[in-house]
Image: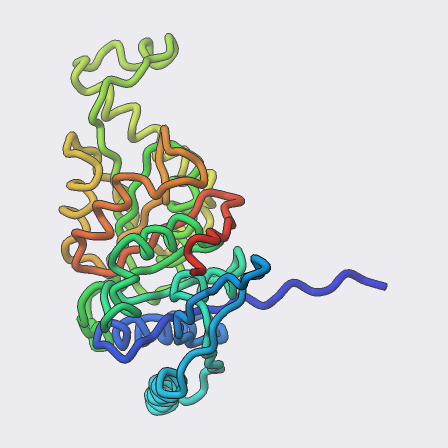
Length: 314
């Protein structure tokens, strides 16, 4: 007997009835429609856990009012999708868990999770605070946090995607994801940003090549070489129809990404850069960009990170 076929990639989006959740729904639907992927719309009830006398952990049933409200939000979201994306494949899910856990448990490495930056009450605000950070850090797939309610459906300019790289494996995955997004668009430009904050160790060969240049230009020269190598490894063939530019700056990484991404359609970065603690925390740069950006931000996980945090399931 042959092996089971892998699950088809999908786009998951969390909704709660808020305006930013609607913006996330539209962003996710456009992405699913462009790629021909199914869209799964998730509403999280956040039903609490309780421990019995014999230490068994059980999830308490949600109230009828909470279930009715959740079903109403999902029905409204499905109706919106039918009106604007009538040919898309849409599934809805009423989850018992907290929002981040509900989405993470339903996601695989080839999927995409989309959420709004803030929502209504406890359910929605979870995406803005520590839960959104944990979702971006622990999800097995890229997570897009949609800020604001900007309508890009009538955009006439090329789509602008900004990605931050630092040479780490995680940033290589972020670059590959950004290239994929750019190539999937009809017309797009990709801006690759590298922050030169500290001196870079120089190999003898590099010193020889740069002997005719001013020493203060060496870090930028090496950074551009690094980025060119990263782009080539990510797949030069998929950049043929994408306008790729490189920005090397001495701004702090988060500031550089926010500056270049101020008018972008998407800012992409890895969950951790150099020196990050694998599987424990979202990097400080990622956290800063997530909380300060006013455009959609995609956080790409480190390879192999898929760790459910049982503390979040309470």
